[in-house]
Image 1 (cartoon, rainbow, N blue to C red):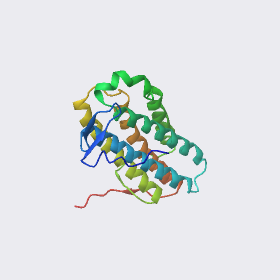
Image 2: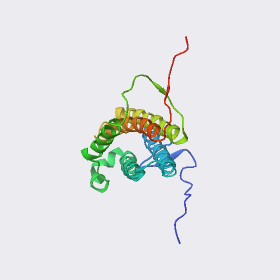
Image 3: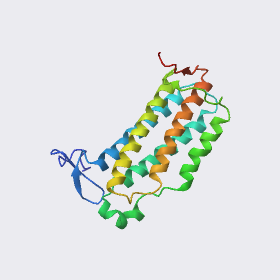
Length: 194
């Protein structure tokens, strides 16, 4: 018989980490990987919306987003590991690489070659897929903030995680502009009310 989804072990507000330790569900570590999970879900939603657009050569964008989702699962695995077991289980965790960050940087550079330089802040919106891109960007920034909070408690986290999240939010911002261009959506400049 397959194991059940519900275990009832979290009914009193605790959860288990990889390695067995139980911690409160509002612990910084849980918030960190919970935000990564939410980000991964929004990346999936964004990917599905891109699939439904008339953008040419969207397969490359979708492949990059699939790669990002894979990397976010790896980040989640690292963050879900009990710090006292980290050294012992490190070889079991999926690795992160410099190339993961370089992929984001190269993708940003390629998209920016087709974009006009930024002259003003833009308001999120204009098309559903652009809006979801901005939502994913904001969730990414929140995830990054929670990982930083956890880093202050546990500075031995995988060293690629913070630069990856920082670059990913930049990627999502540039992707929002790139999608606006490909969908012929006018970027709405932010003009502060005086």
